[in-house]
Length: 478
Image (cartoon, rainbow, N blue to C red; front, side, top):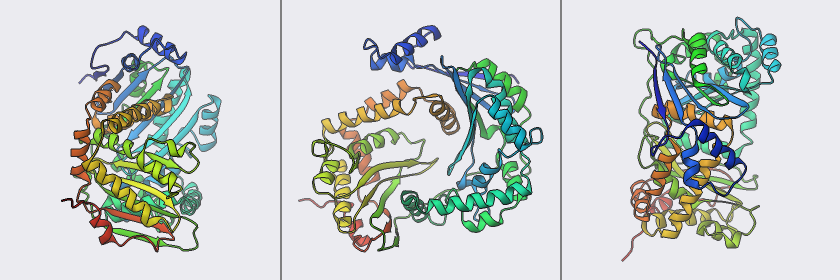
């Protein structure tokens, strides 16, 4: 069976590579002759090839002298059980510590010799290992990636050393109160399901997970159809495909018996969880309802709705002139130090909410304003609010693709999630289609009269009773 090749480019028309690069060059020189629409069409198309073993190879070629190449894998804490929760995170620390071909010292020298930078991350549904290097060193980068993913030694000595590193990170995470608050939010919202588990896992597992546990984790998840080799920058797609065949063509694609990992359904529960500590100077609070999954068409309208809510930090200048009503009120009445709206999306669910930091005297007022803002989204949304929010979403979308590493991540994440990379012009069309009525309807669907989940940390004595917060999720008007 021959490898299949797909092209994902502009939905309006194809632009020759030379012309695209010319427009991109003029954009970098900030020439005003290039419009926003032209810039969307000028973005290089994403090429996608599927190898015989099911490994997908995706790339975006530009005229950069550097490139980022990485492997994105469909695995994370949501695929873990209570017994091995944290295995993916522990593996992330071990996987670059030596392979059968390159012991740790030799591997580090190989990376340093080409001036590359190795990195990795684990989330609830995806794991990534990637390298940023000069474009001419793409072959070595792919070789090293293939080696660490397929032939890591995972020595017992290094495992014991990395246990201490992970335990230290668990301690440090406790000082990041936003992370603590959002982990508590997941634990409460998805209680009794794998999505409630943290990425780092409990300290008990960090102390007890064995080398065999990690080998079983690799055997279960590191299968070619669950992986995407993504690259961005000065790369040739045909060269990348050949390198993938050479170094990753033997990646396994079959499972033993019925061992195929599947995502178990997750149930959202309206609830409340808190960690009260009156010695802390500020309270960290998150309130959320169940949002849309990554495949839902409601994703873009919810992005616009969140942009209407916006964000605020006490360090911002010109607070009284902010067009965002919640931010302006937060500034004028000194309701909080910081807030931002978020929408954390997963395969079949999501958390749509607002996180804020305030002192103990303003928790009630800030919660009231947040819920009041939600009700406004469900009932009275203006044209100007939506127009401003759409511009924010567009700017954010383009800003997140500044550099080869974020582009590579965007490719890997989207191909794993959607089976393709959605072109910018398609995202733009979806954003443009959002109207005040669409925002009203979608927010009513997800927010109005829904049971929220609340997580709070710090001096939270003044946090309103849950029943009162639940009753503020709708308005009775006569």
